[in-house]
Length: 266
Length: 78
Image (cartoon, rainbow over all chains, first blue to last red; front, side):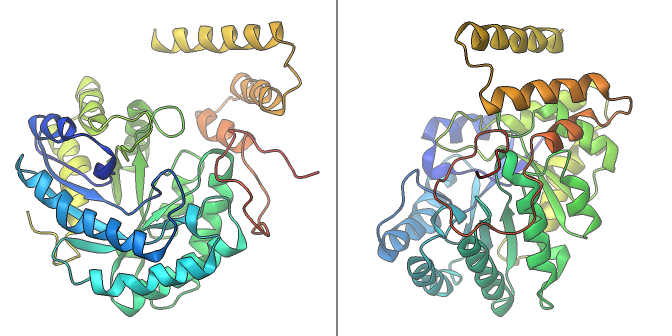
């Protein structure tokens, strides 16, 4: 069964991963801008990174028949420096013209600080100004609940945001209802130890009916599995779910949300 | 039996921590409270309740982020 990987940091993955993803049925991968593992020193460093994910990664993916799409932002971990963050936000509009850019992401919060919140709000304004989809990162571990609430409030406080065009990612059992009840889409991330397992994600699909939900691997330079979505598909089959329900989770839902950008063409 | 293995893993971890004299580490204290949440839970929402027990329940943004990582359990600032 074909699937879409809605959140993979392919710039940090080897070409072997593209081969294995393609073999497993991945037809498209979406790559949000993220932290490199260190703080970049200048806005020009981000310009080079944006070129890498809008030019090189689509070409690398295409060799294996995988379409590659991108989201742009300065990530929350680097948002404490307001001056740098604003310089980077100033670069983004020129890259929104690139043919594989879907929207603004992954914006959000990390430690739930005032500066992070300020930059989140400025990204939301940028998305509204340019009519872009939004992909949101919620904080890790003990910070996730508080950050999710702050993020929902920030989005709700902006009258120009259409909640059906926002996905709040990395939800877990204690935040998923907050996100869905507020009218946003919710992403469940299948990432070892610090986020969901396939089994827990499938539990949540069953509990919430699969509407406005997707699953992703968020594979990056940490210990993570770019085939986490196919693993979750196996879990769904093991539980006896119909192909239609599986396809909804891994193909129809991502396609519905991402298809709101006219750049998302398969 | 995957869950059986995970319970044994948790038990072995607590044994290791105790042998190292680290039982008072706030993350270990929080883990033991989370285990109690699992045992006390009568409704099928234990996973969410465990996550809540490990969460920062405050609501206001912090002044400045001095670190980037999370530790797994909330410890209020002194």
